[in-house]
Image (tube, rainbow, N blue to C red; front, side, top):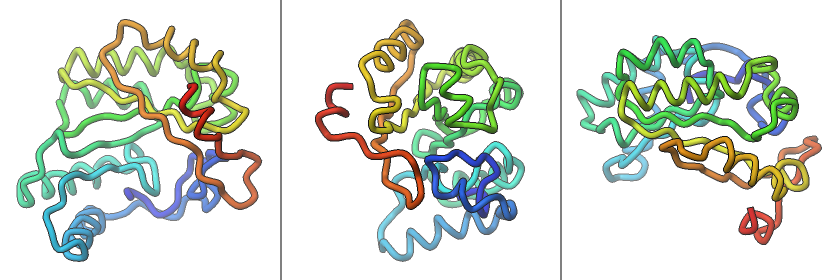
Length: 200
């Protein structure tokens, strides 16, 4: 986690329902890695910032924490992933600095109108701008991006969505991470069947 709560208010996310409380300090971010390492009683093989919060909205503290994780804990850049909803301007400023992590962008749908609803904090930000920022990231850093899609039963798990996603990403060096929705109390969304996920 990079924050306590989250300001993005994505309707499918439990954290989004908590609202934003504060940014985590760098030491609090590092402490999570230390605690996991202590409790697991073995080396931490990878870290994914996909938990509570939007990492790019607390980047100063995240960056300081990652310096410690890299330099003092010895975890390499390929073992650290930062997941974001994809703020194009921020990504375009970060890419030339070649930050030491893998990038994942939570796309969730290839259709603009649907994304405006699923990720309200990004309403009006064209998917094409996000993909262009991803292209710039790859061209500048040499690191492939992972595009994440949370599959919501009956909403964005249709063959049409799959075909459109393929059309958007064709020719791009990237991976796609399909994440079946985990039910959240009070959410209008449901988990897709394993067969539906497999079909997608």
